[in-house]
Amino acid sequence: MDGHPFDIGAERGRVVLVYFGYTHCPDVCPSTLADLRDAVGRLGPDAERVRVVFVTLDPRRDTGPLLADYLVSFTPEAGAPFVGLVADEAALAASARAWGVTWRSAEGGAYLDHSSVVTAVGPDGRARLRYGFSQSADPAALARDVEGLIHGA
Image 1 (cartoon, rainbow, N blue to C red):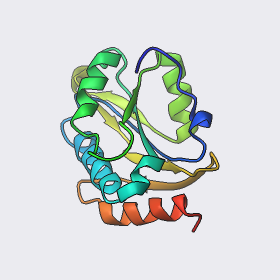
Image 2: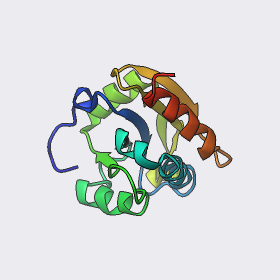
Image 3: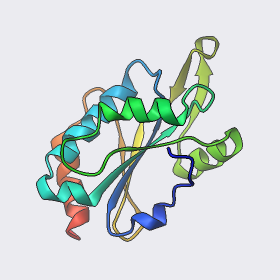
Image 4: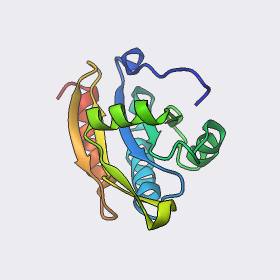
């Protein structure tokens, strides 16, 4: 978000929740980010050991400053601020493929149809859990799973 590359390896010791979406998304992105905020907010002091990373699927419109402004409203009171990432088209395509994310332009490019998956990377740096998110996600269940990853369960 600040123009520097993000190194997920530097987050070892934390649980990293990775989500691909875009700021102009009218439905699943804001609800998923709200669910992530609620889940992290349930962790109490353990919230400091969690990082949420939002990777934009729309780098043409989602600039670093726009992402920063957008994510402020989702960052929980306790815990690390959410991180927004912007990549060029080639890097985004490779990264999305590696994380199992799909998307395509819809409605003349105004919107994107995309998968809504959060990947939980454990403190050891390995992908541990994948959550398919919808408008009926359960932040309490996600919080329990994240606590399990934090404490090695």
